[in-house]
Length: 297
Image (cartoon, rainbow, N blue to C red; front, side, top):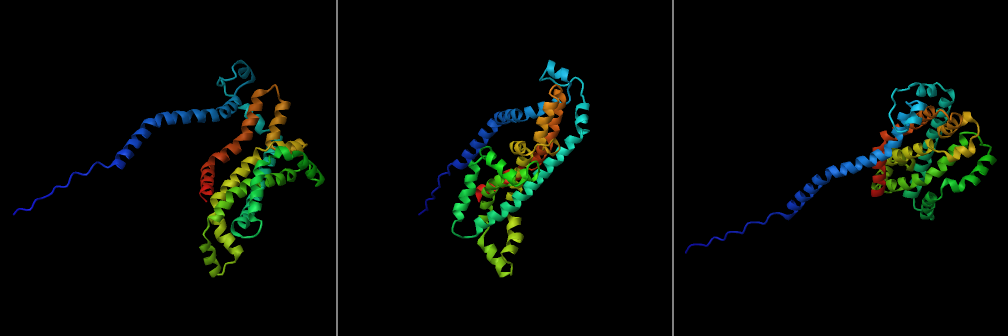
């Protein structure tokens, strides 16, 4: 008696494999259109910046005749005259001091406040976090009048300290909102292990918390620096001496003095925004990585 051999039916083609291949084909087909749309958005964003930079190399007659054209002759003297201006470098230094001091203050105070809110359990912690979150909906334009009175009563008018302290205060809500998820995501086991090794709370803070939250710290530092560098309204109310102006105010003052010299105004504007533009471009990925980590946390 011969044993019957049962042949197993062939396995059907794997549907997930076909689905994956189909998705890859769709992505490949939509690639050129995606890049085209992205290129258009990039050109819309950087178009005005390129117009200002190139306009600084043109003459006033060329700008009047053809506002959107390229320079027939590159006039480097527009930029060299601005770079030889003592007021420009003084205002550049004022902006640098304001931005760096604001960034340092925001990072130090933001990390400490976020550490307390994220790692300590006490009554009112949630309310405190909500209070900082509510600060995001309180723009400086609403508070400019009482802020002006406060700065004047403190004797900080026409000083860099009069704009640095408010800038730190208004940057703290964003800083804490970003850093608290980073600090909450740190496992409690690390703190317990550090305590067993003899590290106190300050030791754990400096040795573990700060290094682990470095992506978020870099993110808030960059955001604070760029915001302080581009700040206009607060210096407009606080600063009155041209030698104490920051660059945004300097651009406005320079444009008023040389209203008929459009090419020099464009050159001054280009040199004023290039440092912040370069700084932001170099650390763009840090910002995206820090915000992604904050959302995951």
